[in-house]
Image (cartoon, rainbow, N blue to C red; front, side):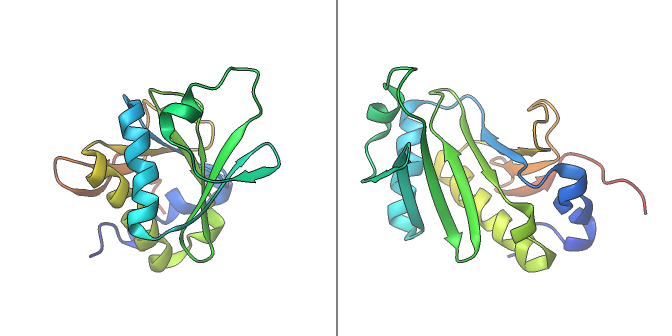
Length: 162
């Protein structure tokens, strides 16, 4: 199922305009939402790697990770929803699920479909929006995202005219 067409969103997938690593987020999240995302990794069979600093570790429970002291080593969760496409989750905030995905890995209709499938999987499981903004952009100005009301990825921003 195709939520968006490459021709409609090409500019939102341009690393020069959006930044190579646009920001994706689930606002108003909870620890339970984080745990749902961690569980989703296993049920979907996505490849993943959890690390603390430079040390690769087994995937802990969300409450454990989010209760770490501020001075603790940085943690990251690298997820490959399909081979060759990497999303990096930052387990920093209990109230926001934050991750990056490399637009250079998501070119053409196949890339759009991969991103839509990934956002739809997360958003459907949580019943919450999953928003994409430009790299370093404001979460109040998403360009696209999963809309749980219509159960698909939709455009929020207007691409510049050709």
